[in-house]
Every structure is written in structure tokens, then in C-alpha cells.
Length: 103
Image (cartoon, rainbow, N blue to C red; front, side):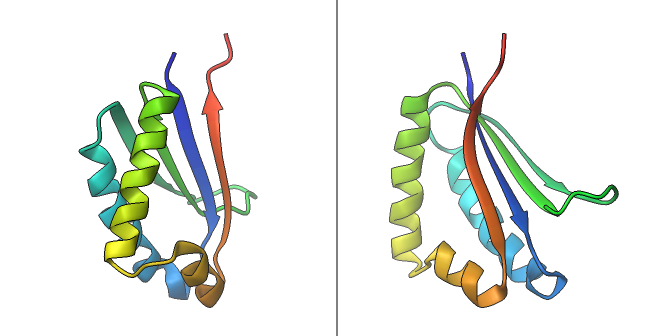
């Protein structure tokens, strides 16, 4: 059974370009990781929801997510990038979670 990493963000318009640059760099790395299945980057264009950017990454297993998480951590250290710090500076709010399909 595949596992889904779904991260939802409230990103102010002024922060969107910088935020998306970081997302794209991170997702390029994710695509190269063992167990990666697919990813989708969504932007809300209608409706009353508060999250305007959603990242959706499908993985073959929890082990694949765990390994990818370590690879991302290493990349962020190399880039001297601290996501929660950037989010705080730019007024971004995040809801990060892992999901599985209901049968």
C-alpha cells in the first residue's frame, strides 16, 4: 500500500515566488529518491479553503519517506535553508501530514 505525503500551505502572495523556488528544488531531489512514485503541486484557484498551495507526493512505503526525509534534511543543510524559519519570516503557515488510502 502506498503512502502519501500531503503538505498544505497558506502562502501570502508576496512570498509565493520564493516559496515555490524552494519547493521546486526540494521536489527535484524527491523525484530521484528510491520509492518515489509521483508528485503533484497544486494551487487553489477557487473555493473557500484557506490553504492556497498543496504538495502531494506518493511513496511506495514509509521506509521510502523516511529515507527521503533524511535526503531532504541533508540538502537543506547544504543550502543553509531552514524551512520553518523561512515560513515564519514570510508569514507562511503549514499543515504537514502523511496519509494512507482508506479501503
